[in-house]
Each structure stands twice: as C-alpha cells, then as structure tokens.
Image 1 (tube, one colour):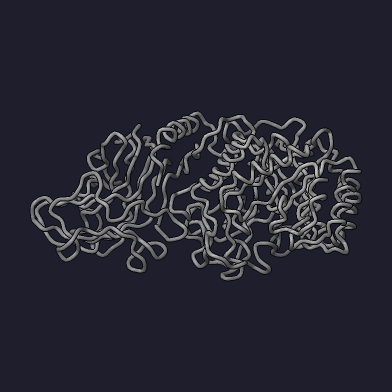
Image 2: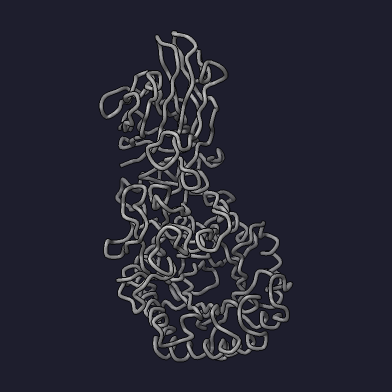
Length: 607
C-alpha cells in the first residue's frame, strides 16, 4: 500500500518526472547523476560492490562457458541466481540464450555476460547517470590463485574494462580482494604476489586517475579475514594487512558483523582489526535495526582513529541455488534499503558500501531487474522487483541508490521515507496478480467509493466477492482477479470494490488496458474504474474504449466466455489529474441475476 503521507511528495516528484520527459531528458538519466568525481576518495562517498563475474558461451572470454548464472546452460531447476535481470537494456549481441521457456511477455529468455566491453561500459554509465560514486571491484581468490588460468585472465580483462569505464564516466574504483577460495597455506602469497605482479606490475591500476585514494594513498580492501568460514590465522592476517600498508596503501577491512565482540567470528583478531585504516563490517543477512551497531562501531573506531564504511543492501534471497525461503529478506518496495541508509546518515557516517551492484545470485543487485511475471521465464521462479506486492520499475533500485548516495554524503537532507516513486513511467502499473512476482490488490472484498446497491454474493446471500483466483480462468500465468455476485432487483444495481492504492499522474497520453472474461451476461457489466485525488472517476469521465464503448461499467463489454483485451486512451478525459485508487465495478439496470467476470494483465502507461 502506498503510504498516504508519501503521496503529496510523490505527486511533486512525478510531475517533475513528466516535465523532464516533455523537455527531452531521459528518465534513465537523473539530472543529479552525471557529475564526474575529482580525485576520488572513499570517505564521503558511496561505493557499490561490483562482481563482474557472469559469463556465457560465445561471449569472447577465455572461459567460453556459463559462470555464476549456472554451472551449465541455465534451465529450469538448474540455476545459481535468484533475481532475474531486465534484459531489455542490453543490445542483441550482449544477450545469450538460456534453456528456459520464453518470458511472460513472449521475449526469449536471455542473460548477459560481464565480459563484453559494452556491458561494463553500460554498467558504469548507469553509475554516472544515477549518481553512484563508484565501484569496489571484486577480485576473487578462486580466480587469482592460478595466475595463468582462464578465470584469472577473465578477471584481469574485466579489471581493465572497469578501469577504462570508470575514467570515461568519472566514477571512482578500487580493488577489493575476496579471500574466498584461498587457504591458510596460500593466502599471503596469493594476495601479495597478485598486487605486485598484476595490479601494479601488469595493469598499472593505481596509475589511473579514477583509482580511489585516501590521504593520497591508493585504496585496497581485503574482505574475509576474521570470518569463521574463511582462511587465514590472526598472525597471517596481521602480516598481510601490514604488507599492504608498507606498500603505501590505505587498507579497508571487510570484516564480520561481530568484529568488536567476536560474535559469529574467529576469536583473537582484535589486533588485526585495529591495523586496518578503515573497517567495513559485513551486514548482509542482518535483518534487525542497525542503529545500535552503527553507533557502537562508529564510537569504537573514532576512539582508535580508524575510518568506518557501513554496508547496506536492498534485500536478500538465494532459494534458487542455496535453499532457504523465497524472498527471504524482502526489499519492501525500497523501504528496507532506505531505512538502513537513513540510519547511516543519522549516525553521522558520511560514507557507505552498497552490497551489491550486480549480485543477482543472492538477490542483492541494484542493477535493473525483472519487474514482474511478464519479465521472467514462464517455467521457473525468479525474484522480481514487484515481489512484495507493489509494482516497482526495473531501475528503481538504481534510482534509490542515487538518492541514498546524496543523503548519506550530505548533499540531500535526512528524510525517513523513500522520496521517489516506485514507478515514474512510462509504465505505472502492470500486473497479472501472480503470487510472489506481481503487484497484488491492496484490498479484496472491500467496498470503495461508489458503494453497493441491490447486490448480494454469489447465490443471493452475503456480499459480492472480489478475490485473486488461482487456477480457475486466467489469461496469463495461473492467477486473475475475479468479481462475482448477484443483483437482487431489476432496478439499478451496482457494486464498486477497491483494488489498488496508487498515485498515478494522468497526461493526454495515459492509457489503460486489461484482459477481460465475462462468464455470464451480468459479468459484461464489470469494468476497471478509477477514483482520482479530486474525487472524480473514470466511469463518469466520458472516456471510451478504443472501439468506442463507454468505460462506465454500465456499458456492457466483451463477449460471454471469451477473453477480450479492453483498451482505453482515457488520458484526454482525465488529463492533469492523479489516480488515487483503482476499483473494479459492477453497474447494471433493468436486469437481475448473477454477475461473474475475470480480469487479468492490468496495465496503465504513458506511451
């Protein structure tokens, strides 16, 4: 449900969005985003972790195989990722065919590779356009342990592409070593040799003007020391951190959440943690209020003169490859992400690490993702941005990350609620009401503006029923909305039930469409209706379908027993107004008896 306290602010934002479209500004290019970073630092900046680890056969890489999407061609039950990407943003040459059925919208089910230069370039262009300061480039022990392996070659190639894209789009970047896959026997040698021979010796990475520095020192992060399931004794970790500091580097420690107390961590690493220049505790998986940890971490690090880089993330799930429940840590339409960011700002910490930019595997990615069942394969579950029941655009988490960056770094004031619309258009609502993937009704069986008269429930008793029906009659997927009841008199009878709480601005170009199946003659007098913020309605606006039928439910539509696509270019009739609620209404005069109808695939767009 849209929080009513948000609605006035959202209306202003949506109006500005529509104005920007009219002036020719891209909705994908927020005006605040495209400022280049000068001499990038990590303090007073927000970086996103960048994996760059997806591969596919035919991507031109030395691996030439699927990686991180799946061990072999991704197909139903054979995947290692949770959140499906929005593939509409990639060129045809950057899409690789999977073994899944087509998407709900009929498009082929494809996935991208992180290897092509154009893909890395696109990702950093988005960082710039949406206002994210830069990337912490992951460098995995499993790849670099064998310097001549195909995995190492791919990692080095992606690294150079990140370097070039960061310069091109004015973003900062730095290397983040993830020690996963290394052992006590090789962790010291692998990290120090890779930095000497590859990062500085071969790639000259720190010579890049985009490479982040703090206090004039190049930045490096080492993630994993102190975790109970990662390699390295305290003595080894101490030597590694000191070695990097001796090279003149500013060293960040990616450490366990319980680093101060040894909770969920190896004991005896206190001196290691004190050696780092900055501490970045890993918070992914934590679902409680982080305010207490933020202030305790901040105070402890202030006392030792160390920096603090909190980790925040949008949500989490990995049911497709590691078990657990679907949508395990829900994103809640951005509320979860924003609450963490607001806590960071409230604690007075002006920098943060977003986990992660492209982590589709564990469902933490902020990159564009599938919005609903129309954008995922029809034969495999995947997490979508609308999984929590509200329609959310594919780029919402990029837009939100940009606003989070501004709030944490002090460019914008602290606000406690998400300050941007879930969907700024051109699509404002699209749902086939599929559970776990699509926007769901805010209300069921709730009479709304217009009320009821001379109606009862199916069979003549009780009240009409408005529900999500599963495996009955549906146009797409397995679900549809069903409105069913009976007229108790031949005089005028009507029933208007609330369906969705929305905040959709109307222009002359706004359109409505939905699939419609009346099951009886009374069902032909069922239709989608709107209530505007000024109290006016779609039914009384004189808007018609594209075939000239009045949009009022009292004007029968469709044919009994047949699915029909109802379409209305209603924008001119309600131009300048804002849809506040979407209703489903029945309205009929001169006949009694039952009414029964199904509605599916409701879409409202400005296009």
